[in-house]
Image (cartoon, rainbow, N blue to C red; front, side):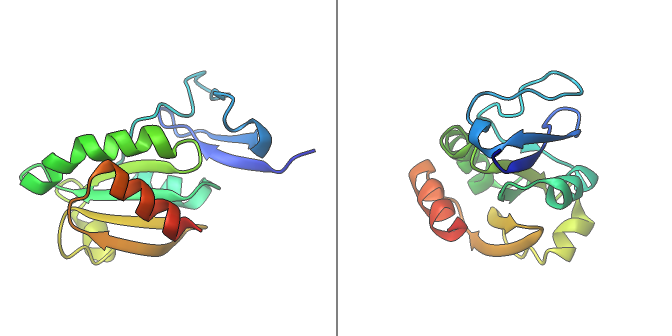
Length: 145
């Protein structure tokens, strides 16, 4: 039997166990029956971010951004394109520093956009500044190991 991964549903936040060998087989949530992977970043508030961070076996690539930030808006479609390439090997999420200021302060986000990669609940890498989809994918794969 293959190792089971814990995958948090991007819609209802239920924790699902998915065999590692079946992760690319378009798994669905046992609770809401929605797709566990949509190829798009998931917008998270602070509570949902903490749930993903705590419960997911997958690396978590976070785009810390704000609606007033021009480079953040310019990078948004690039980050979305990267999600289509990197899923299901990692979960890509967006956290608004406007909507989660305490989290941004706790994470010491000093400039936006900032990408941070978490694995096993801990931050393993960070990169500030807007990037294109190919750069995001290359950086994420490099730092994820």
